[in-house]
Image (cartoon, rainbow, N blue to C red; front, top):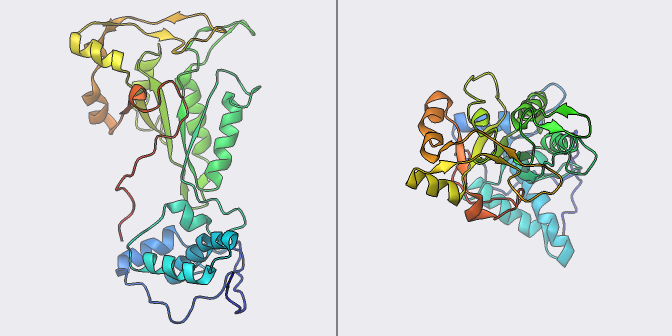
Length: 305
């Protein structure tokens, strides 16, 4: 498993890495792109200033990714050079957590996590506050989170165990939003979050309008789970009932929401005009009854340099 025999370079918060080879090509980023990259993706010292150049960052990432060659007795240095060339020529850029997490003791490179939320305060592994804890730790490492809030009972629904009333999905969405507002993702930026609620949940109208005040929910994008049955109701201008639960769950009594026609609830333009939200997802088309299967597609949305 050939690796560099040169003295390793040690920098604060990073694993020892061989020095940047003198023969590698230098970056041809524009002056503005170079400044943006230094600010967003390089590792910083205690004074907040970069402790590495763009080229050294590329090499750190390339060498970290190439370590997998050790599992097959491959040539780490050769693969690191190939990966470096992809980066320096801008033929390929990884996600942001790869730039911030590669070469660190944790080495967390994933950008997207989908976490379940059950209608429980935290006694089970997917309880509301257990999931919030897990999500906070993920964001601390640079990852972003997606949540399905559809399993939470509607606002003011009876909680039999305490004889109290439920907070509802939007209330706990605000709790999550406030918590994430205090976390700088990967030490550099706010975390990205997606909240989803099904279109047949009794609190769907509150959910759709929860970002109308631009200061209300600031760390979440929201999307409505649009079912095939709902779209058919829109086409036929049929009544659309709001019910809970959205799946067969014997532990809950069904909660009936306000009725209305499919078309009366289909008003995407208002949300977009108010504050550039909300989106839609189609669970019937993507993941059937799963609340947490990652919905991954290739998007041309990375920073361009």
